[in-house]
Length: 162
Image 1 (tube, helix red, strand yellow):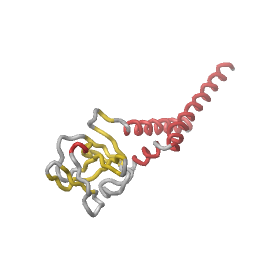
Image 2 (spheres, rainbow, N blue to C red):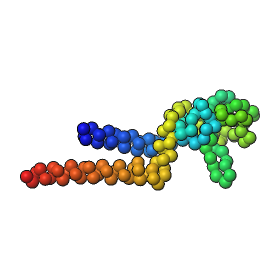
Image 3 (cartoon, helix red, strand yellow):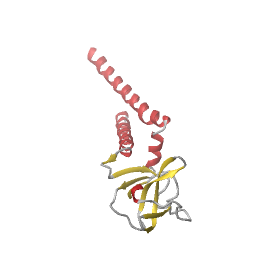
Image 4 (cartoon, one colour):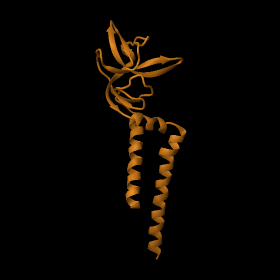
């Protein structure tokens, strides 16, 4: 029973580690992962979902895109739907918003089109990036695994001596 729980714990630990690492990677500047932190795209994309974004050559009306937006002295990544294309700019809008965004999006600011939505995983990623999350999801499990392995080694050594 304990061996099964230990195996499940190890599997869970590595799955979490894999999700956190993959979410921070940039695959050849073509595929990126972002955590949706707002409700502006509800019901299509819930808050806390992870969106997988792929760079495209062109975009059309109705595509959901992630792009760099300016948010009071820092850069923010926004995921909204293209509602109009005029000239060389995109007009975007969150599905849950009443009005289109005031800022027009120029093509060089577009990161890519949303190709996959993974619900709820973003909460785990956001938590893992906090100090408490690092402690709870990475450091504490690693220490626990090392302690369990040390206990196993001491048992083997004691059995060998007897």
